[in-house]
Amino acid sequence: MVFGLFSSSQQTHELVPSRPSAVAPDALAIPALNKLANKRVILASSSPRRKEILQTIGLNPEIVPSTFAEDLPKDDFIDNTYAYPLATASEKAREVYERLLTENEADSPDLVISADTVVILPDAGSLTKGAAGETDTPDSSAILEKPVDAEDQMRMLMDYNGRAVEVVTAVVLVYPIITAPGYATKSFASKTLVHFFDNELSTLKAYVDSGEGLDRAGGFSIQGYGSLLIRGMEGDYNNVVGFPAAEFVRFMDDLLEEDDGFLEV
Image 1 (cartoon, rainbow, N blue to C red):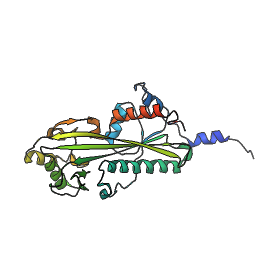
Image 2 (spheres, rainbow, N blue to C red):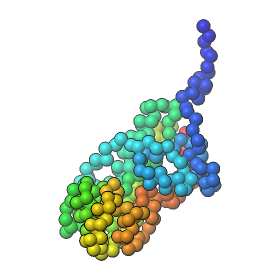
Image 3 (cartoon, one colour):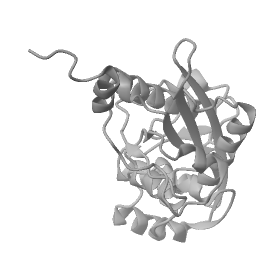
């Protein structure tokens, strides 16, 4: 019988599967992307739109959707609507990081990226209440997520008519550190103001009948037929689609500048 055939380093290596670099070879040679080369980068989302946005900047993360129920009570956020998507994205990122760490500690993620997008409708106190998990805040704003059905989607779109809504995407990063609890969390939120035409009801009905937007926060898709409903916007287009890539890169650059040990564990 032969003992000690494999060293501990060889055994550890076998537990870590080989994988392609998370950064495309033709990506811009900028600090944020340079740092992520040869790192295990996870996108805690099943959204194909977020994956596509990241791929356009040369980042190809592994896709590991979160199992978090995304059912935080909105009444807990009546004093700060922007805290709601941040809290949801934080829960999703932590769930994925802790799950992957439990599955294989030797192959833990270097970075987990999570995002949550909501639509905030200002001055919504006088508007018709719906079923899409909305809640009003003291300043009469409403937090809107995906419509529950076509009727709910139609109500949302009617509420937007001739108005502006805020599309807010919160982005949360979770990464390992040496001190307890073993990981750190950093986050930011990006806001884009979307202005809607005063659309005819027949136009709104045609949009709802198309089936588009039922799976989108706020019930519309700016990169699809929904663009016909929109007069203009102020802010990042990709933020409305689901991920503010440019701001993400700048946020990463700031973290690298502030902390020499960022993503070094």
